[in-house]
Length: 67
Image (cartoon, rainbow, N blue to C red; front, side, top):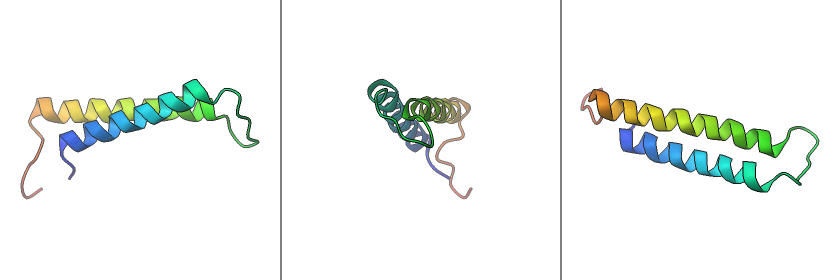
């Protein structure tokens, strides 16, 4: 299982990519979906990943050997 630091880092990167899409792709139009909505979804996923990493640190579930 991944360490809490890895969850936290992946969450920050995902949230950052989502924020960039949300802020800078309003004028980009593609036929299937809107990039600003994809950015919001990535921000939500990144936020959940950050919270999960924090939860694992606070609950002491990080870096368990043998699991």
